[in-house]
Every structure is written in structure tokens, then in C-alpha cells.
Length: 227
Image (tube, rainbow, N blue to C red):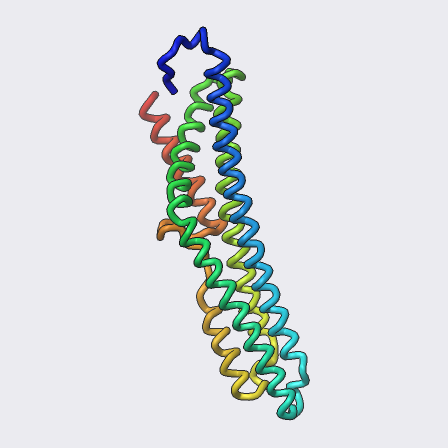
């Protein structure tokens, strides 16, 4: 950053401005990430509730003939579980539509920044003063990418748990109209529910590995051209 003033005379003001800008940037980034993680944890909780309601609904004795009130109770509980599941998916898609552009920019900036900081680390010749800052940035970027993809993977796993719950219960012994609802959930579970970021990648641990490998590949190319 270039300042059009005497750097020696205004040294402390320049340092104050730089530190303030860095602190504000880190705070905004951390606050945004924390809010997103909290929202996705809430959605994971909705998936758990939907799974629990389905399991509880089928605890009514479907091994024997159930009366009309029992059938209606099963049906009502399954409907509530389906509604919770639908709202959770809708909320997750709504959040991603709001965060899609910032996350897409963060992905590209993160990959480039990680590559450049790895290059600075190797070019520093293990000088402690030159090594500390790029190492801290590289670790922070890696941690941020890991947490973002871990949240996406966690959401996918919780949604898959609903499919596993529906598959494991004795749904085939339930009344026919209940079986149709359960079949709807089984069809939904055949395709993984993922957090898609601008059609670039899905939030998962596999995507984290892909981003890390891409950063290392760019770093390798950059380092080989500078030798």
C-alpha cells in the first residue's frame, strides 16, 4: 500500500491505519463465517429433528393392524417430518443464494493467496522475520477453507442420515398412503444434498482436498518459473 506522505514522519499513523484495516477485515471475515456456520448448524438440527420424527412415527406398532387413529397419527407425523425437511433444504438454498458471490470470490482469492504465501515461505530461505507473516496467512487461509468445506460436508451427512433412517425403518409394513410419503423421502435421498458455490464446487472434504491441491499446483508452477 502506497501513502502519499512522508513515511518516516507519519510512521505511527500509517501503522495504525494498516493495523486497523487488517483488524476490520479479519473481524468481518470471521463474523461472516461464524454467522454462516451457525445458520448451517441450525439447518443440521432441523434435519436431525426430521429424522427423529420419522423414527418416532414408525414406532407405532405397524407389525399388527392399526386402527384409523393410529394410521392418521403415523401420517401426520410423517407429514410434519417431510415439512421440516423441506423447510431446512429451502433455508439452506436461500442462504447459499445470498452467500454465493462472496464465497465464489473468496474461493478464487483463497487459492491464489495460498499459492503466493507458499511461494513466499519457500523463497524466504527460512528467515524467521520473513517466514512468520506468510506462514500465518497460509495457515489462516487453509483453516478457513477447511471449516467452510467441513460445514458443507456436515450438512450433506445430516441430510443423508434422513435417508438412512427412512431406509432402516419397516416402512413397507405401514399403511399405503404412508408408504407413498416415505417413498418420496427415499427418492429425495438418492441424490446428495450439497452446498453448491456458483457451480464451481460443492462444499465437502473432497472439495477442500481439490482446493488445496490446486493451490499447491499453482505454487509449484510459480516456483519453477522463478528458479
